[in-house]
Image 1: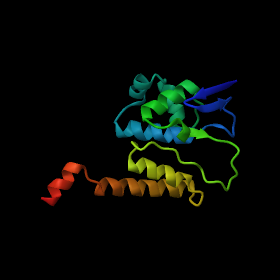
Image 2: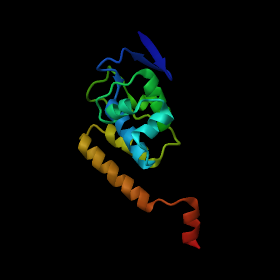
Image 3: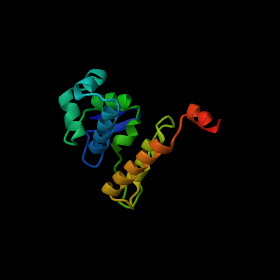
Length: 149
């Protein structure tokens, strides 16, 4: 069975192609915690059950195409970000897919995770360091004009 989801072919969710559940789960957990939402709150907003959300966050869930679409939409994230694309050699860099409206920390995190020279743990640590530094040093346009005056 073949299914297309936003132009991405989903073929039976095989092991080499399919959903990167850890990527999806981390994104859901991060957004949920940033917004101070419970699993039930997110379930109400997305139509994905709280138990499925919990499994996805823990990396043990195997979401179907509808749930992937709902969560990607809620995350405002391109579906391609959480899809494995087979037929790549281990030395090929992972493609980084993002939309310009995503925040800078999310884009930097995606690039760090795709860097084949970094371990998962190192990429996660660098991402968190960048997120903290970005929050501390970034300013909204109103803050910039107040500090100049």
